[in-house]
Length: 206
Image (cartoon, rainbow, N blue to C red; front, top):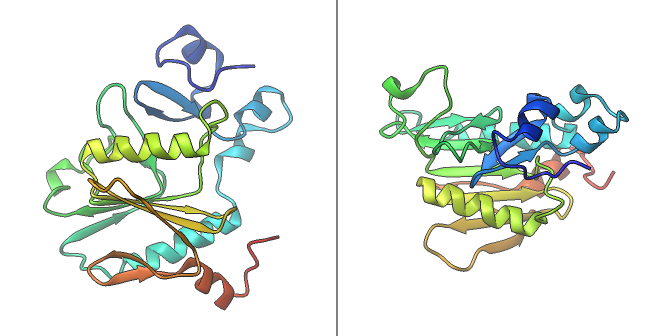
């Protein structure tokens, strides 16, 4: 079985596995997309593991609609698996980023990965295969890498556990809460995933 954390540029990474299976690079380690082992075993196609689930897509859509309440003169709200470039050993992907327009200025927007940090990153579930690291280890690693990049807050929404994790830079204790409660983003804007899904008649247990 292929290791999920081969170093970038190794023969195994470059020659054996299709580039489409790579989800991101964190702290110099390559992490493949969740389900990549099924592709290697030929029980799934690459296309089958590339997309989000219906539940994940609905959650992201709801979050985007909520975040668009923020002042668009002050913030960019970016989504669609944002590619980030921290340095040659760090190219993470993010579900949603709230960028200050004073930081992500028009001259920095081009056809390449974004190389400045969002004020807030929001992650909906874990999209990478983290079997060797574990979910908690991966969340810690990615959150701290985003803090080093310059993020002030990282929010994780875990649909299986129906939990929200809010981590703030400089605070040792991260807040874990049920997703049926209100989660503050910034400037008075908050979201409540559980309440929204219930309102829409969506059962996340299915």
